[in-house]
Image (cartoon, rainbow, N blue to C red; front, side, top):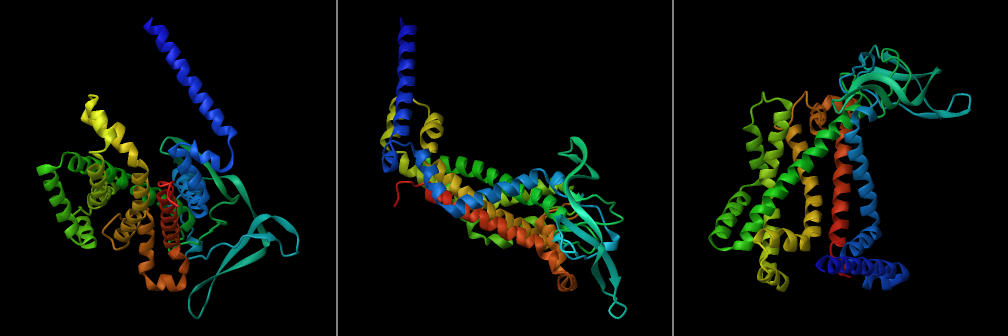
Amino acid sequence: MQRIEKSWIDRADEEAAFSQQEFIEEVSGDEKVYVASYWQLMRWRFVKHRMAVISAVLVLLFYLVALFAEFVAPYIPTDSFVQYKLAPPTKIHIVDSEGNLRLPFIYKIVRERDPATLRSNYTEDESIIYPIRLFVKGSEYKLWGLWTMDRHLFGVDAPREEQGVFFLGADRLGQDLFSRVCYGARISLTIGLVSVVVSLVVGIVLGGISGYYGGAIDNAIQRLIEFIRSIPEIPLIMALAAALPADLPVIQLYFGITILLAFVGWTGLARVVRGRFLSMREEDFVMAARFAGSSEMRIILRHMMPSFLSHIIASLTLSIPGIILAETGLSFIGLGLRAPAISWGVLLQEAQNLRSVALAPWVLTPALAVIITVLAFNFLGDGIRDAADPYAK
């Protein structure tokens, strides 16, 4: 009898959900707002924010490049073109010297040395054409360290000793900057995510304990937060980074910088979580769950956390640019990641040489990648923050 009643209840719930979805599809215009769920309202409001949508596409594109850096980059980062040191960005043509329309191609780059200044000048030999092809064979690499491959997304079908294509120019060692920026995105973008995830876990745990229980625990956690926040952030990060041994392997140094940035960044999120828990722990739905016999962990995870999950997502999205900038700054001044690691901050160390900047301003290209990424994350965070409150006008 109980099994029959349960099946009837499940069937009634399914029919109710189906009829509600059918009703939502039938209503149109502003009437959908009155029957839509919170996440539907949030999605509709986010889509209306055009800059946030464009930024979301850019962020997704950057992370795809970081994920498939070996395939997207035309060369591996250690490939050196001795004959193209500090070569400018390669010009892409679609019309040849005779005025014929062609698929994208480049001319052969010829290096000439000025006898007076001994400076290298690069000119195009229009008699030799190299078409830009997709899925060309190149240097071998291991995709994600698992599969050996030699196909690259694009490039020229010519030996490295003969010709190279440099979309962002070459550095003083003749290495392709575009390839190195693609590889650098893997560290610079993931260090922000990993650090923010660590900050999220620490901030939610300590902030939730502080706001839910209060009393002496709340006082102890808040005094710890105030102590950390009372120290100037930049000197604190520099001091902690300088304490890391200089001879650490790249992987250990990466995780060391990640934990360091997370240690400094968790306090703000903990304050936000504490404030939300203080305001909600006396709400009717929390009291009802407590009287129904729910455990404290279930109340926190099932009832309290989802009610401001969107605000946490917005806060985390706005925190990632700060982590990226912090890592870039530390690596730029030599306190963060160091060669042979490749990150945008490590690549910008080349810009410390004023002679290189004056002769080859394209060495600042990694800074452009940082700027675009930070702006994209900021616009994305603004869009999520506005969408998180869909009832606001």
